[in-house]
Length: 132
Image 1 (tube, helix red, strand yellow):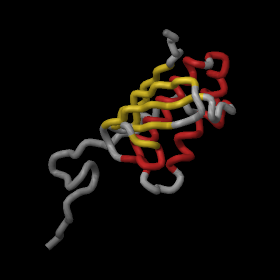
Image 2: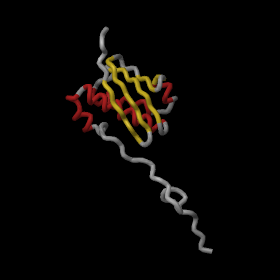
Image 3: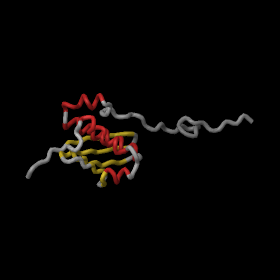
Image 4: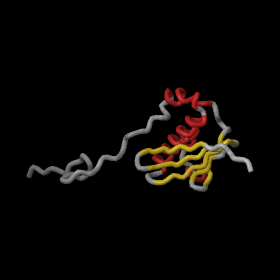
């Protein structure tokens, strides 16, 4: 029985969380049991976001990606997936970690939705003011 080397990474963005597993292969990306194209569903440009870590290291087609993504919307999930792939690649190729860092891919994007405050319509928007 041969053991396959696997690398794991967890990526987060807004409220989305992606658990990513990298396996040496030919570059197939599976998200929640679907291919990447099926999961994105024709949204232009999101597939390029997922491939950014591989292009930064010139590692296209060297690893298969199996990911479980939950929470948030499709855009946040794709960014979480990219972050998870980057972290897994940093474990797989520790010598290329500075390249990933310089590309800004290892940094988690901390921006989240601001909570709604009482006495306001949304987080900052006020109710309409009437002078008379």
